[in-house]
Length: 240
Image (tube, rainbow, N blue to C red):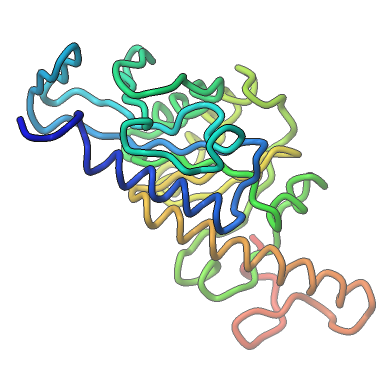
């Protein structure tokens, strides 16, 4: 085997995405974490690491990704976790306490391949007031078909209650959970997806939507527009 560590390309890619998430101010030094599910295509023995063919693993950013390293991670710092047991089997660093939320998200729908959590600034406005975000931009409402950008009721960060709530909320969505974003009340956003780079696109576009929706809300309150504007019409269709 020529790779320096197991799942090297995928771990390098995740490290790059995490770095860009921090650099683009889509999270802050208070945290953020990303994981990707990988079904092992073959059996791999590398040092003390044993990967079983057909078994599910997640690769995941370590705790203090933002506080300690400002998102500047190497591929070797990305952790490898046995999804069935939650055991860390490789990677430099320690698991975040939010691993329970990631695992329960994957358990909610086996088609979910990415769980992406951040403290994105514009979206945090809607999350901290505990209100669903109006979905008004074409790319979020139509192209990505995100539907209502729902804010979940408050549960303490890293708690079993929050993980359970995420599980039940995703389970209720069925296959819509494969491309979804929730606001976590007072905590941030949670994206579930089938592709890491698509999850990044969702976060970027929802951040723009969050700012525009805020501005439209101000215009509505001032009486300058009657309703939210989206795709050339005054409508609430994309809010449901």
